[in-house]
Length: 429
Ligand SMILES: [Ca+2]
Image (cartoon, rainbow, N blue to C red):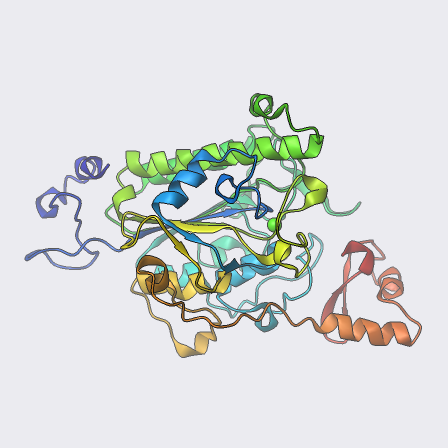
């Protein structure tokens, strides 16, 4: 697809030699190094370990199978058991003991978000000269504008601020008094997309629009956080036919959703090729937590599920696909963790990693690209002081549930601040 890149860049044509494009800010003359790589991070929601073809699933994912087979499969890769903690670790490069997000997700009514003084991955990439775009599910808080993706490092944002909305109407309810329409463009409500399109299609279309309007000679960071395949289990009918043989209705719908997601990833890669990015792109694919068997997912043969710290909750699907990989068609058994993407991507972007960032991740690029040993030898999965505190409370005869009932709002699922911690009501866990 590089030849198309040349056609779109009349000003730079003289400096272009085949697929090589000038590094931003560098002068002409000599052999120009290639532009900084385009970084494409695709995050799937609630896709279980067994829910990808190359893990032996009955679900068809020809795109993911092919991209992974041509790239590097990460087969000792860990994430968090639920949405907000995993996403916070990706965006901050830090364990959630450092961000206050160690307990549960950020609920719609909860005044919480990633700490405002944390320098995020997209902010570091902006500093390194990248254009940064997010499409999809944020779920890292929105109670004030400073928490929004556009204030946390993304030049543009299109997607939802919470999780688990309707795929077509984009309505979401997180408790009786926390219902609303959750599709946003930048910092505004994107009312014009109400009932417009299935989110997997809509998000892919938005990615294509970004790639079409951007210049492939300038480095781009694209964070695509698909809503799929989280509940509700909604999918266009034409994806269901191929799974008639699956008896469990939830599993059948879920399988169809995964295959639709797989097609979306294919369309993203086709757009990367069409608009001249692909040859200089690094595509990372990751799940955000284990699958939920109660909603169609499967983590076989791993024990546990979404929300648990068994392997089934925290072993992720992960692979890297890129023409820039030195070793292609490889499987990595190196220990890797979702916090590792921050230093890895910032280093690839030739950005600065100051010590005071307090990162918990490691640069794993050589481990992935060259098969060198992973620098990581351990993972802190979590320390959650709430459980200890809650136990003390129960021993004194008061449950957190009671405190929730007595809290200001009195709403189920609401949060309260107790002993310095944001505490979720037990029944919402
Ligand atoms: Ca999730």
